[in-house]
Length: 403
Image (cartoon, rainbow, N blue to C red; front, side, top):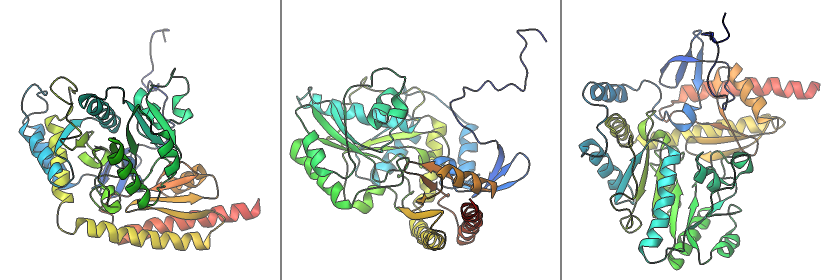
């Protein structure tokens, strides 16, 4: 073989992912079928993306019908399907306007820009800094890794983008001290996913809302992971009784199709005039078909009642596992179907052992394993997943006893 010839089996993917050695060819509801025919219970949902499971018939039909008509025309022209989705999202939320993009990081970039522009449009251009919280995860762009503030994401990418002041989660005094003449707003996840499935008390969020009102700051909720039903209501902030000025959505918004959104009040979006922001692909017709179809399903009567019942059942069964295997797992965290199990053993060992039992999970901070099943998961599937977890706990407990 010549030096320039390349093998078809050689992997030319940029090695930024530590991928498990398994590949899938199709899915059915909460199940994924691997290329070798093995069936896996999917309690990862593409990291909280496939909220309606795999191959949901309503989503498949909507995308197939749209794909046969138009994929993309750009935002140089009206997109009625996008106007419809924006209207529907605003109707069921605090928001007056919506901007569509392609990912959670882009949604957060729009939120950051909007917060700064709000201050400038109101005669306070010196206010550009945002207060963020330790343990947060806001994306992988240069601005959003600076907002995240974790060294492991910042390392090697030069000076962090200026404008972010990080404080401990839940520390109201630290927030008050961080507010200064350059502060534009506060950014927070209603429930940290990547950070270990943790959140302060609702009173903390109410205090943040009051601080923003008193100091002419904007309150931004990053609901990229928690939004679109993941915590048992359409948006996680609903259970807090606190309304943001700006909110980022993505992940489950398209039911698996890549899309994000920035929702805002008219007052918060006052500076976002023609030319101030944009996207080539954002809001394209395929994405809008997926977003509208996802909302069709989620807004059906009692959809979230079922999610909440599933959550209660899963948490009860997991609590029993914690009681019986305290040398393997120590705590159950979370809301809705964003559940974290704090591990005593290394979380990666637990997650790998679960994958060997054909149950897919995803890691998080603080040695936590996340369970993120599709929101359509039923009682039988939950019991099946917990049985697999128990088998793993038995093995790991025996291994620890023998060590």
